[in-house]
Length: 310
Image (cartoon, rainbow, N blue to C red; front, side, top):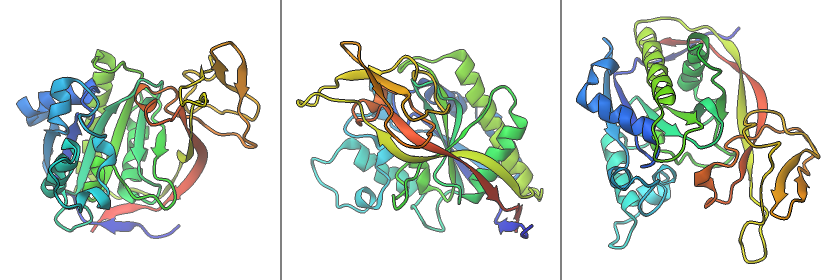
């Protein structure tokens, strides 16, 4: 087995709730921690909670001008200020200056980003790629120690794609995606699960900082390969809905010729791919505008090298 990789201990960690202003578990958790930050504190590092998109939170909408969680790319962060630019572009630059700059030595060591989904994703852990060593070890630790529900790992970055999410301004990050939960609603069960997941992740950082050696391991994870749009009429209006046999089947195998859509007149539309895939974010409310009925995933087993602090 290869020798463990060594990383510097973490000193500054951020926790963001409300990147989307209608996903309420993270919003109310961040507000709770801003009033009472003691739950977040550990001996070897500082944790700073914050609200990602204050205007969207106030209006209880996903965003005001454009999706904040797609705005942390070089294009937006380096663009010149303009009078008519969306609020979220201005906000992304401010967040980047406070918690980044993205890719710099001055950036926060880690950022958690708290989300809810209307899809039946359960307790999902989102990392950019399997090459992100510290987040992958954190996911493995959570899977070993958080036993209330399975915690599938979703790898969101397509090949050649730049990281675009809010936690990409930090040196490393992890997003929590808990569902199903309706938009603009807070549920006690998912709120509590999110709080417990963050506590578990912070315990992992504390152990890492204090010198715990984490051995190499193998982990199963779901890696995005593309996105499936809804069938549409020529005028762009959707012509079918997610099939009953696919609804709520996130992370379960979808085989060739399985039904995926049902037209409004009742006909089935079958999956025409030639390999088994694992859909996620099935029928997510916020993704109708993004022309995405579900994310197409492949299931892989990855070998992750050991980890210890420098």
